[in-house]
Each structure stands twice: as C-alpha cells, then as structure tokens.
Length: 177
Image (cartoon, rainbow, N blue to C red; front, top):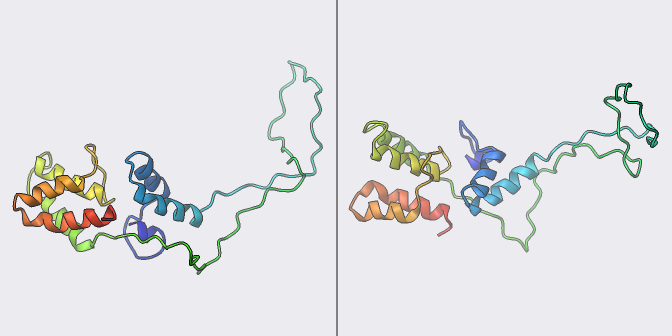
C-alpha cells in the first residue's frame, strides 16, 4: 500500500499521508517515517499568494458600532508574494552518500491467505481477532487491540502452527530484522 501511494505498484487502497503519520505517531512504527517523508515530498502543502498592492493598516481605532472589515488581504513583510506550489522534479537521483530507504512489501498472496483465515470462524472469535491484528501490522487494516508483534506471532509459530511461519518472516522484514 505504501509503494502504491508513492507510484511504485498498485493497490486498491494506497496508504495516505495521514495514515502513515498515524503509524509513526500513534503506534511508534518508526519504519513508516521514510514513507511519511516521501509522501510529504510528493504532495507538499500549497500556499495561496497574498496580494502586495494593499497598503499596510494603520492603528486607527474602529468604532464599535461599525462592522469589522472582512477578507482583507494581509501583505507580506517583504512585499513579495508567497511562492506557489512548485512541482517536484521527476527521476531525481538519490545522493550517493545516503542509502535509499527500502520498504518491504508484504506479498499479496500472504494477505489473501490471511483474509481467508479470517472467514474460518465467527467474527468475534480470538482466531479472527488475531488475524485482523496481523493485517493491522501489515498496514492493511486496523484493529482496536493494535497490531500483531513479531514475538507474539513467533509464539503461534512455535506451537507448530505452520501458517504462522510466513507471517513471522514478513513481520521481521517489516521491522527491518
């Protein structure tokens, strides 16, 4: 989903800047900071130019029975307009002294398998809640109990539940291990 949001792949529901920021600030998932930074570069905030031909206001008191003016343009301190949104250059090379961040993308086949596991039992069962937490950790869904961590997934794998093997591997790759 992160790669799709950055134009490198496709997904029906690419991650948004707000969602990626939430992963960093709310969940402490620092690995998402690179995604946040890239999305900010891709979609910088826009600025509206401020007219500069309006004289600066004076400190003349306004009578209380007179309505206050509205929509009065505010000149800039240097009398130069605020720059408008400038498009970012495309195909900008990454500086050689800074390694390019790499983002692991969970295979769609694993996500599809997990979505199938979710349908195996009642929606309120622990089984379903566990798998939804895995999807939350993969950035595919959110769950009120938070995302599944590597150590918890390893516990299920260590019980001999083979379907947890690729989940543990994916979670480790997402954590950079």
